[in-house]
Structure formats: structure tokens, C-alpha cells
Image 1 (cartoon, rainbow, N blue to C red):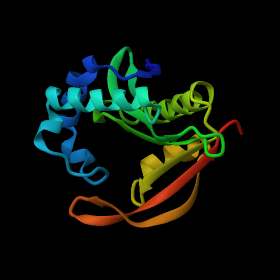
Image 2 (tube, helix red, strand yellow):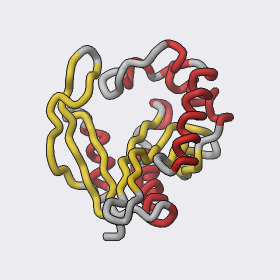
Image 3 (tube, rainbow, N blue to C red):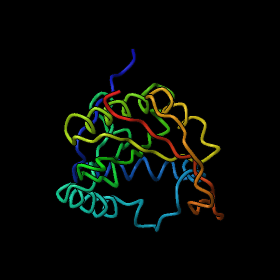
Length: 175
């Protein structure tokens, strides 16, 4: 039976399950994410990070969500860099799904739900995202959700010991 995917605003109580996923998946995510300090992988470190995300939410600069399958936290989807000004109205989508829940459609569903939040709740006009050039699974998730690539950000992020290029993605919301 295929489980359904939901998203909701992150809560401090999500720190322990997120930390457990991040500890288990540290090697799997190494090529795609920047190195983190040791406390990032603890429930306390995640609780502190979540508090910062929620402060950003209250300030209107981020919408931090968790991805749920069968009411269990299996990942995160975040709309960051929110620019709500009438002449901009955009945000950038980022996401990850725990390895134990991958290849079941959760990432694509979560991004689709985040796009709905961006349109209906946040009133945004444009969605942006960035992927590592080699991250083909993430690129498939974005394509399935109507994103198109529009450029390369050269030497944009330091990952796994070297500067990497990022593929930039966009989608006009409401289309």
C-alpha cells in the first residue's frame, strides 16, 4: 500500500525524528549538502535550528515544513528567501527525503504541496530552486512539478571538499 504525503509547518517536537534521519543519512546526503557541525545531528542541534526557522517564519522570510508519510516525519520542504514585495513575490524551494522513504513519490508530492502553499498561503508569483548538476533525481522532481532550468550558477556552493556548480530552476506560479 502506498502511503500518502502531507506537509505541515515544522515544530520543535520534530527535532528528534529529523536528527535520527540526518544521522542515518549523513553519507547519502554528503554529495548534495554542505558539511555541518556535529551538533547539527543531535536533537538539541535540530531544535535550535528549528527555532531559527520558526523565527524566520514569523518574520515572513521562510516557510519551513516537514514532510509526513503516515503521520511520520520523513523529510523537510522549505520555502526560503521569500520576497513578498508586490514587484518580486518569490521564494526558493529546498527539500530532502530520508533514505528509508525515497523512491515512493514523496519528494515530488511534497514539492507540489509546497507550491500550493507558495500560491495560496504566501501569495507568491515565482518559485525558484537549485540543484547540483549531478543530482538527477532532484532534477526529475522539479521537472515533474513544472520547473524549467534557466541557468548555471558557477562555483556556487562548497560541497564535499570543492566548489560546485548549481543548476538554477524556475516556475511561474498559477500557470
